[in-house]
Image (cartoon, rainbow, N blue to C red):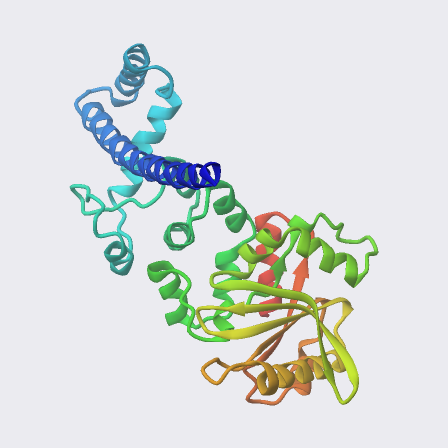
Amino acid sequence: MENIVKSKFFDRVLEVLKNARKQAKIALNISMVYSYYEVGRLIVEEEQKGEQRAEYGKAILRQLSKNLTKSLGKGFSVENLKLMRRFYVVYSQDQIGQKMSTQFESLPVTKEGRKFFLSFSHYVSLMRMPSIDERHFYEIEAARNGWGVKELGRQYDSALYERLVLSRDKAGVERLSTEGQIIEKPEDLLKDPYVLEFTGLPELAKYSETDLETKIIDHLQEFLLELGRGFTFVGRQVRFTFEDEHYRVDLVFFNRLLRYFVLFDLKIGRLKHQDIGQMQMYVNYYDRKMKLEDENPTMGVLLCKNKNDAVVEMTLPEDNSQIFASKYLTVLPSKEELKKLIESEEE
């Protein structure tokens, strides 16, 4: 008994200290971001004093790198100092949405009125994005969802911004760059295509729907990241019985933000009208038998390799707001190729 008590006591103390270290690390990372911004400012101001700015600037960076490395150790190469200078140049002229700033009221503000929410490594990645609107969108989403640098890179490479833009009007697109992804209705969460490169399945080789389902489950964390905010996993091959016949839904999720079930049916071939009818029955069953009174109507997504939008539109009722068909990709093309694919779908 004494060992059990001591063990529980130790675990609680350890958890407190781990959380403290984690918060201290986050605070330190944010503090360094502001420090690098100020270093960038000092470099720019010093460079502007020289008559021959290009040569004078190079000499400043070389000498500063040498002195800082001698005093503080690694991390102050000429290339890193150039990044700090660029960081100041880019973000001294940049403002983020007001709503985003109010979510982080305790953070300091630069002289120009800018707040920073992410690590410097995040901002190095963001600075490579040529579009200001995209930069703002990915900065907001990375801060809101706790994306690491790797996750941020993956979402950018999979053209998340462009995929969300397709389903929005002009006002909705503007909100993406000022507020991030606003989730108010089922369509706000929908993507077309979904990018499932993490499954490792080749684009042209033959595989079964079971193979695809298994790969998604094996990489559930990555799939949840692709789905977006608020999703929790309920189950795979979820069975229900109706009129003495058994049916199974491939994947069932619940979205906590909109409070509704989301059913996924996986199709490796071309989507048929029978598949849409089957999903309609699944959705009706969940609406009538599974959802609670305070929950919203069920959403069904047919995830397919190929589809005919005309068939989908004709099969579903004109006021449909519950059943959707989206393509998926198992190999991530280049960002340029993905943009062309999305643009062709829009046309």
